[in-house]
Length: 365
Image 1 (cartoon, rainbow, N blue to C red):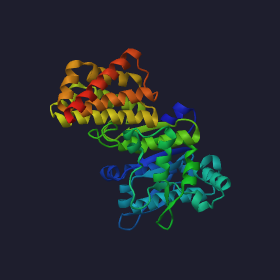
Image 2: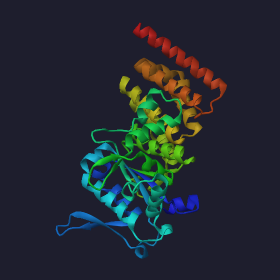
Image 3: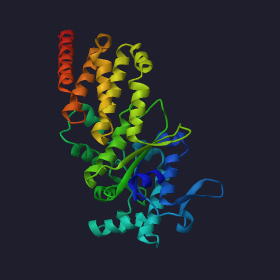
Image 4: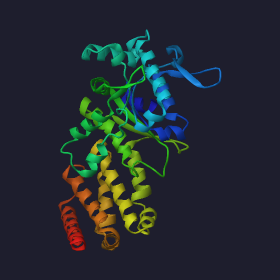
């Protein structure tokens, strides 16, 4: 909150949080605790020391307004943390009906606005815990990005909202509530997710941009402006919180463009080249969903893996398909406006891509 207030000039009214099941298992529920803290709520233990309920922290003790929180739960979280989802939902609903000034309770403020704007009752307007329909998993944003089948970014937002707009109800079931989710997302100032492992960072798997990128893109399309996108490194001793842009730069330098990393990958031959392509594709995913990749990243990817003839030959010999995939993804990044490459560089990449495609056709003819 301090960082966002300093950057934006005011306290954020709403934060969109991404909660994953495995992350919260490993961190003893850190993400759950963060949501409660933002809401100005606290867990209540029973006589055995188990967390059985939640309560609101009085405003005079909290010392700040209650922040509204839109929670996007993974399907795994929904399945294994049903009790905790109920507690988060109850915390929101307690805040929504608290007799407090609207300027000190953004949950109540936005809930009342949804009632007035959408014509829904208070119970539906207070929905903040969202996931997939039961039995369904994922947001499908990653599939659209990876297949290059999306025409504009509104499709990415629509995919996310279609899949992730089922709200937890007080009765414990999940019900479609897209209108309420969309209305609340128009108030979001920042999106946030914990990163609990350096081994699986934001460029290692596509699910990070599928979820955090998906909700950020949805806020952008609904509100008309990009929210701040923040991540927290659970392993860092200091400066745990950083912007997504900073984390992309860090991971790019530490892994993808680090000779120790990519040379070690190439020692594994076919699969190693595929792992490099996966990270290029996932980095591109952050361009598609959050515009979080600076041009030098694509410049250096091209220089390191494709323009260097020895490197390109080594990669193509091991896995020509993945090597061509890197070239194709770079050309797509430029075509979609994510990268302002020079004409000379584009000509080289097109020639390289064409040669790799010819090589593949020769292999599989």
